[in-house]
Image (cartoon, rainbow, N blue to C red; front, top):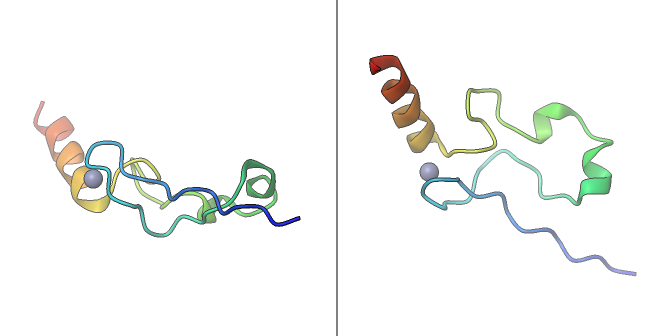
Length: 62
Ligand SMILES: [Zn+2]
């Protein structure tokens, strides 16, 4: 049985595809390292580089 590849993770604010995160289904995600699931950064795995930079600067300024 061939499973379809899950969709790419996208940035929550701009909708761009995120880099550095494996496309896997929930079952195989449990077996792999945490570093494959998200980028080691604040908002890693949620926002893309430009959006996370803006967000971090925004939170610092407040
Ligand atoms: Zn973005």
